[in-house]
Each structure stands twice: as C-alpha cells, then as structure tokens.
Image 1: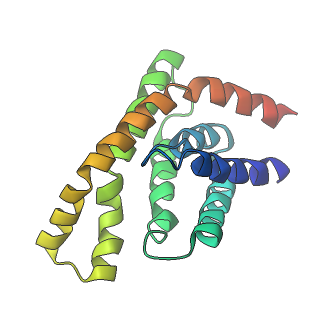
Image 2 (image 1 turned 135 degrees about the vertical axis):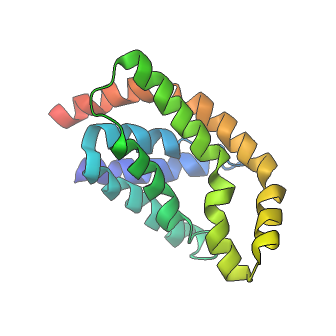
Length: 161
C-alpha cells in the first residue's frame, strides 16, 4: 500500500512540476507501467492521483473526466496480452499513450457537453477548439511512453522487494 500511495502522490507531483507546459505530463506513462506490473491494483495509485488532483486543484468541471479518462487507459492496457515481446511492447505502449493523448479532448467531451449543455455540433466545436492541445498532449505522451519499458523494469523490482 505504501508503494501505491507514493506512486499516486508522485504522479500528482510530476503533474504539478510540468504544469508550465500545457498537457505535458507523465501520467499516461505511469498508468501504463503500473498496469503492466500490478494489473487491477494499479487503480489504487490512479485514483489516489485523481483524488489529489481534485482536492488540491478544486473539484470542478475539469476534474470530472478524470474519474473515467484514466480508467479507460488502464482498461486498454489490461486488455493487452500479459507477455508481449519487448520490441512489440515498446511500440504498443507508445502508440496507446500517444492515441490516449490525442483523444483526450474527445474523451472529456461527453462530460463537458453535459455540464455546458452542448448539442452535438457544439461538442464537435469544443473538441476542435482543443485539438491543438491534444496534439501537444499526444507528442508529450509519445516522448514519455518511450520510457515505459525501463519504468516497468523498475516497478517489477519494487514489486519483488
């Protein structure tokens, strides 16, 4: 439990450290690596991160998608085979992290549409308006997720101790 608490707090702190750069963070990297190593238990640090984000950032309209958006990434990683060749895994984790970053605005859109009373056209306009930031998010996730295999190796060492 102590490792999960530390990982959740670390994800939140890394998000704070990188707030100067819009939509660039290491959250997807950590969720991918934690899910590969701890499977279902990875939801513990994920939701510690979500709760810390809400407590310190304010539980507001921006926070509601956090309740499901990270679980989607977790679920996608859970669906992958447990034993993939390392070269394939390295590519798959980067692709999934990049696509999750690119789709972030679209994944947030349903809750935003409900909060702001947007119709379908308004929701599409909301997604289009944020596309620039989603592209930045995808680029950041692409770079970060190249570190997935080394982080998975580190987490496996932590699990054994």
